[in-house]
Image (tube, rainbow, N blue to C red; front, side, top):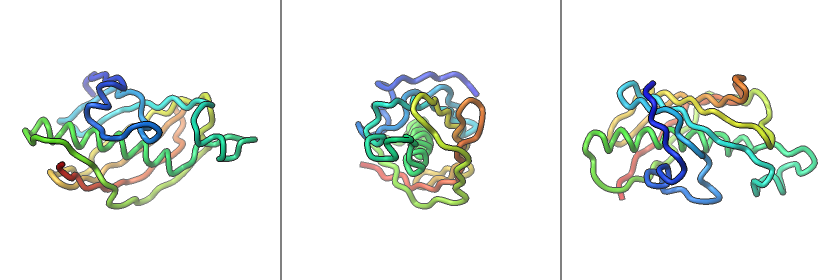
Length: 151
């Protein structure tokens, strides 16, 4: 994978998400040719969802881990479309989730690394395999499908 570090300011130029729903903090690696991206999320005790999601034993909601994986996949899809010369702004919408598995809880202080691989990404649809890891251990994995909408 080629290095293509992107900080939060660069991510905001690509993804339309904003607080509290922008769930990736950094793009560590991007390889558009091989349809791969690696992204990072720092999980802090200050996240709003911890106030109501088991306050005595704070656990990051699984649906938010899936959403963060989808955002990393959306980043890859949008960057691929732009590299192919497609102009304009994009929104990437969920089209399906298959084979989602949660392996262990994600808690404040964890740093999640998302490893995304495109299975089949076309101009308007994409399918990715996503794996989330904390300290090298898989915490979640899924196959996600999305539709790329212009405008």
